[in-house]
Image 1 (cartoon, one colour):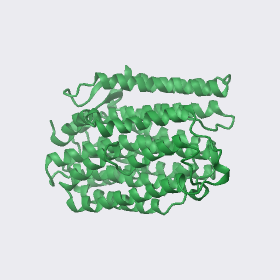
Image 2 (tube, helix red, strand yellow):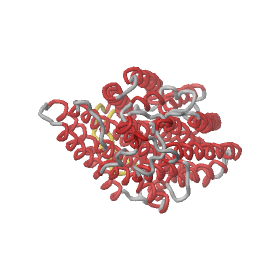
Image 3 (tube, helix red, strand yellow):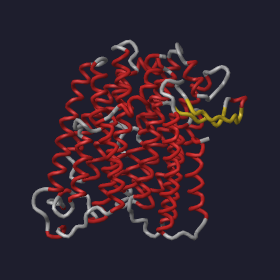
Image 4 (tube, helix red, strand yellow):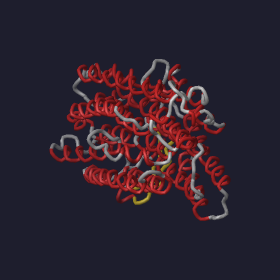
Length: 495
């Protein structure tokens, strides 16, 4: 029951914070940290128990709900789900531990953090299509209140825009789920059955309509251009830990959803849409990096790099799904790279958004022009920001390089011209991060920042752990690849 515990414990922890009013700010924070560690331990145990030579879905926990309609509470993991869920659990613990101004409402803030953790892990652990959708929608509610209640700038407007856009996408997702469900006989929401049956294979126009609805729902969530416009304001106006969760966890629901549902359950139809999806991903790669390069706001620049990096993940998924193009080895490598990108982006960009929170706590501005020369008074902040930036631009020896190398090599074996153009995104990303580091940490040090405090123990510990894993994956990627390839082998090769 370790997967059920991973969902139930943070949910019960959130309920305790919400309904018991006798919490001080420090007590609420310590409670949230302690509770968030339990799902992380559960994911570690699941990783240890997972058999890389076993069946695709393991550690299954299942309770029938409405058998006549094929509904049930079903949880389980494959290598892809376990990798993303473990990263998410770690990032939630870091977000709970990272210092933030809760404005006298620590109890409510940490209750929403824990509720969001339960819903987010539910998305990655669900093996029931209806349960997946319920958790998918619940994450929107929690993130809405985190942005609206503890953001800055125009938080209510940013939260509403985020909610409307992503709810619009989830409505298409619901219609697609119903279309897929009604094509099964007997009716079932069991993901394992749907993957095995491929219920809409050869269904022609109906299958294409369902596929279009799935892709629209997940592309908005990812997001890819031109469906990305909710993202920058949500990131900029959210509190830093919420931004880290939004980038590191919630965006992965789009790419994970693509793999788990249309790619796996509608393989033939997905193959027909693979090239248009790959082209859209390429547009997002180039667009995201170019627009990020033009930003003069730290947080907005990092937000646009998320569009760029998630474009690489979708490019890998699209290349993997092109059944009639490229070798099986190339497609498997592309899918492995897309999954590593999800994990790497969560750790790297999650760290970068937490770092922006440190800048806000000290200077109350994200404007590059306001800073400069900070390597002298804040050497720890400079060192960790530099490490995160280099990981994001794909420096060899770090997790970002491992992910993008797999994606580009795999895509080159399927769509060589798309892979060649996608290389431009790496060059632009390198330029934008080098310019960011130059603006923040070198040059003239403004008088008012000469006494700026460096990272405190909590900030340094959280960032240090996240970025240590970025280095570990970069130096010894087999620790992650061995787990992921247990699923990519099944999905691409049909083991």
